[in-house]
Image (cartoon, rainbow, N blue to C red; front, side, top):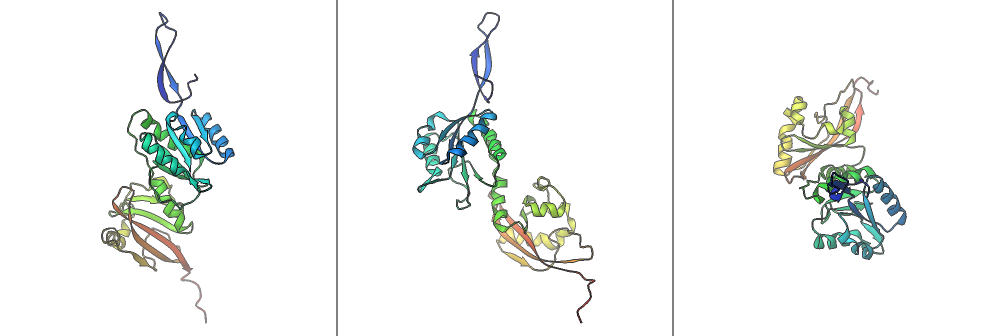
Length: 279
């Protein structure tokens, strides 16, 4: 068997007396459930290249017949004819609760959470996202505790619902960034990875006077705050142009179950203070 996986076993090998043991790798076995054969073929081919062994199924019955032979399950949500991959997920969780489950969905109609360990949105999650998720679950298969970081997925669904033209930040009550969207990162000329864990008031101390109390009000009192004037939500250069914002801040329970706030800002209009006044 080729050394193309991650689960270690033993096999006899050539040694001084022909009895030595040699570590080899067994591939992680992944169940792929999808009602489209072309999707099964594509995912199976790509996962094989990454060292996984796949078991494919196009129906719930086929998938449930394979549940005792797999290490991780990747299940499509919509299977057609009123059937859903979550039925297989529920069966697997009852029979083999230690097996990680990834749900693939093309819509946002499912609430985040459930029997699955991770939920990836098709069309927004790449094959690299799937491979990363599988890698994160290999430790669980080998008996090590695994903490699945679904934080970015959870907050990115909020960002998608708000729209690409909205600047979005998610913070805890002390002003520590949990997430920003691409619009915010571009506006502040940072990468999105720069923000999580940093404190907005330490990085932008000029914002504290206006926003520290507002943020605490939103997170602690669960109030919604609306402001249609420029109040320094973001540290933006004006350069002779006045920005008029529609700012909305509303409470959110963070992925860590702590109180947090979603801050969104959309430009209502831009006014040039040097433009001539109409007669």
